[in-house]
Image (tube, rainbow, N blue to C red; front, side, top):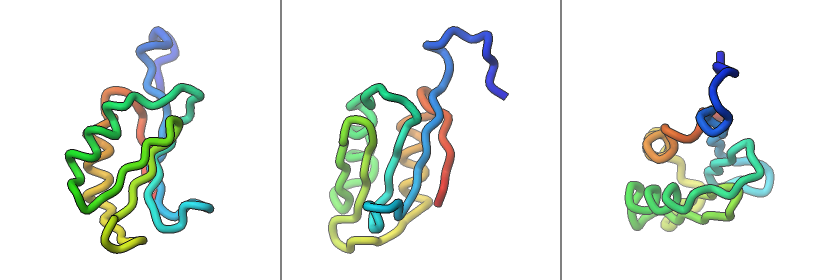
Amino acid sequence: MENLLLKPEKRKIRAELSFGLPGHEWEYTFVPDSDEFLPSEISEYLESELGKDWSIFDRGNRIEIVNKKQSGLRDDERVKTAIEKAVADRYNLHIAL
């Protein structure tokens, strides 16, 4: 259970990693439960971690991840691991894969 006595800036924001949401049927989406823009370091890290075979689209309030070579290709463990490393200190990640 989250410690509500922590200062707001110390609480982790809930975020979800999903695949195949409506309108994003062939891609992963990372969506925080916040109105704030995502730090650009997250998408930059994902680009370096996932490599040239993956496209990372930073939409400000979400990140979309899709395989360049085969649309809809899933590599849940690889994407999940990269997201976990990129956001561990900022977000309370929920996986819906």
